[in-house]
Image (tube, rainbow, N blue to C red; front, side, top):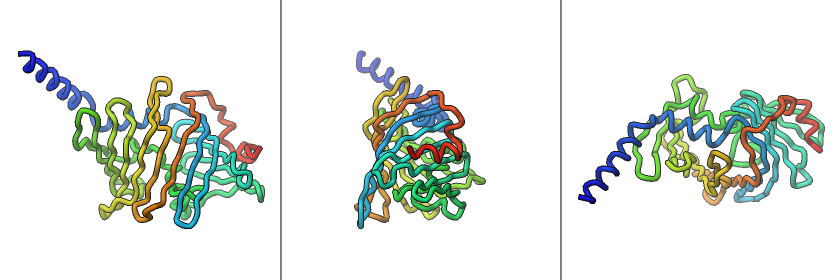
Length: 245
C-alpha cells in the first residue's frame, strides 16, 4: 500500500511539473535568473586559442536588456579599454588613441575583446524570450530540455538553440547553438552555480567552439550584485571615456 501511495505522489508531482509551466515560462525564469533588473560586478575572461592565450579582468554594469558597460581593469596594457552597449548599438573606447569607435553592422560578427564571443552576442545577450519560440521537448526529475527556434522576423544567426535547464535553479547547465543546416557551432557550459539573494547564478561559464578543438573562452565572475540602482549617466559616451581611470 505504501508503495502505491508513493507511486501516486510521484505521478502527481510529475503531472504538476508538466502542466504547471509552459516552455515560455521556463525560458522567462531562466532569463530573469541570469539577468535581473540590473547588475554590477567584476569578472575575468580567459581566452585560449591555438596560437596564444590571455586573461582580462573587467568591471561591468548592466541595466535591463538595453544597456551595458564593460571596462577592462587588467592587464595594464589594455586598462581602460571599454565597450558600451545601448540597444543594438555598440561602441568601443580605445584609451591609447583616445577614440570612441562605433561598431558597424558589418562587424557585429567579429570577435569581442579577442574572445570566442562576438559583438552580436553582446547585443543579443539573453534575448531568448524576444527572439525565439521555445518548445519543451522532454524533462526528467532534474532538468528541462528545451529547443528554441528563431521567430520568423528575428535577426538572429542561429538555426536553433538547445538548452538543458536545472529545475532547482532555472540556470542552464549547457546551451548548444546550431546553424541553419543543423550543425552545432558552439556550446556553453555553466558551472559553479551559487545562490545570490533570491536567485541562483553561474559564476563560471565556458564557451567551446566546435570547429576549433582545444580552444575556449572562460568567464569567471568574481563579484556580482543584482537589482541595484545604476544612474543612466553610466551608459553614455562621456562616461565611456572617463572610465579609463
